[in-house]
Every structure is written in structure tokens, then in C-alpha cells.
Length: 392
Image (cartoon, rainbow, N blue to C red; front, side, top):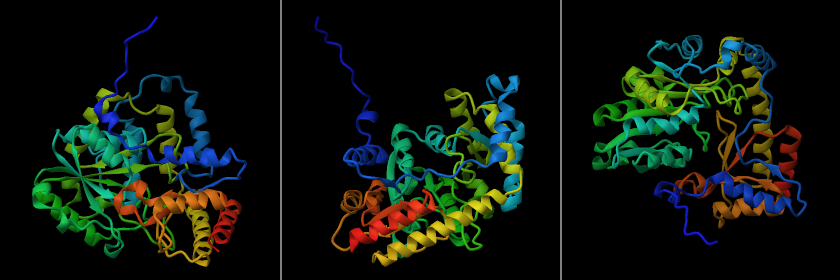
């Protein structure tokens, strides 16, 4: 029996670009099917385990029957208090846990939902290019228009705020920034954040700072919080994640902090969409934020060793790259005459090494590729040797 029933995706789905890592996974599977031993330096997913004291806290909390019910939409008071205390110790920030902090099911969730609180159809959102794809996708889902802010090497991979047309700035509701930066590894100083605050005040734009990598830094460098800079809390919100700091990517826990009205707007969206983070995970996150941070220092030490190893291999192979002060990424210039997709394809085919083409993060990422340092040192060393051989 024939049927005329058909499925039509909404326009917002039909116009989505292919998700970057899904396309990479498809190509990787094709090469792996030929028997090639793949070393994946593509996705930024930590290979090291969550510290044992955090896992133990979850095991204990998961056994509590009171944690098996719906949690608070905005987060347990104890979790928000722990987040406020962590911000105070780390950045000397004073945030009210009741009104200026909101729990998130991972910072990605908060980043994806905030346009729904403040962006009307036709409003602009200022998005870094290259940048985390969720900024632009979430803007489109909310009916907003994306204005890309190119991150260029000559500007230290900071957006040129003066290059944003006045008519776009007047219609913009949000600006996303992200330092330490994914994918470039760039960092921002207080002067840049001050200029962002002035720009935001002038045009009445909410600043959304993605601060997922503030704790992964090297050689005594301590990244700033945007909220540390005077006036930032008047115009902005900051998204923090436990995913990379404590190797908790699968746990899905983070928090937003900043201007109470902005936090409240995001909270209104969340109240109508999700039911909050599992309380047992919040209890474990309290332990992560409140305990001695030696595990974070050890993690940075490991990533520093990996960075040194991989930078040496890439430079031996003749690649041009800056050594980042933070994040577990390397942002590498393509060999002369090759585009980003071509480099990624060549390294996969000839070396069995997965890297991420820079143009997957935006048009301004063309000319680069990204390596993630999230594999064990022996595999990273082997990847470096394969790359040297393939290029040589």
C-alpha cells in the first residue's frame, strides 16, 4: 500500500551546515575500514580520567534518594555558592549565588540557549570567526542574523571592534567572545576586555564570554575572567565549564555568572526547556570546585609536556605555528599551496592522523588546521613521527 505521507524538516534544520566533527568522523571511518591505525587529534575531548575524589563524590551522591527527584531549575543553592566561592578565590570576583549564578547542563547548553532570551528575528549577533560553531547555530535557531568578526593573526586573533559596521552594531543584541580561544589558542588581556565593555555600552550589546579554558594555562600564565574588568558585570555574562578543567566532558555540568538580569533571562529559557542538572552531579561538582586544585595543576603539567612534544615535531616537519599560553589546542598554518581541507585529508590518508581543518570553524579559519593534545603521550609522539614522515 503506497502512502503520500512525507517528512519535511524545518527550514532551520535544512539550512544547517554539516556538523564539523560528523563530517570528519565519516572520513575517518572510511580510512579506518582500510585497516589504518588512526590517531585522532581532532576532537577536544580529554583522554585522562576524572579525578578520583570527584568520582567518589558522585558515587556517594548518587546513592541519596533525595537526589533522584527533579532538581532545581537554576541549580542547588550549595552548587551556586560553591561556584561563587570558586570565582572569588580564582578571580577575586564577588557574585551573588542567588541572583548572579545559574547552573548549566554544560556550558554548551547555556551558550545555545541565551540567544532565545534576548534575540528577536532579524537581530544581529556578533560571532567570532573562526569560532565554536554553536555560537552561529544557536543564533540561527533563535531567528537572529550572524555577523562574523574575523580573528586574524595580525590582530592577535582578537576581533577588530572598529571594523564592525555601525548599522550592524546598532541592530546587534549579543556578542560572543572566547578567551583563551578555541580554536586558535589566543589569549586576551585587560585592555581588550575594556574595549569590549566600551563597545558594548555604546551599542547596548550583551557580551557573552565563553570561559571554558581559563584553567588550562602554562608557564605561570593565569588567564583573566572577563568579569574581573571594571564594568563587565554591567554588560555581560560568562560561561564556565567543568568539562576541560576536571576532565568531566561527559558529566555535563557548568555555570553562568554575571549581570543578574542577563542571568535571569537565561534562567527563564531554561525553566521552560530543561529540568536542571542531576543533583548528584552538582554535589560532585561542588567537590571539584571546592577541593584542593592540585589535580588541575597536574593536568596543566601533562598538557605542557604534550604541547612541547608536538610543537617540536611540527616545527621539525616545517610547519609555522605560535606556541599558545593556554588551551590544549595548536593552531597551525597550512603548507604553502594547500587549503585546510587538503591538509586534513593528506594527514589522514598519508599519516593516519586526524586533524581539524580550520575552515570548519569559519571562513577566516581557512589557511590553518587545529590539533588537539588529548591523546596519551606515546600516541602523540607517534603522530608527530608520522607527520614528519608524511611531510618529508
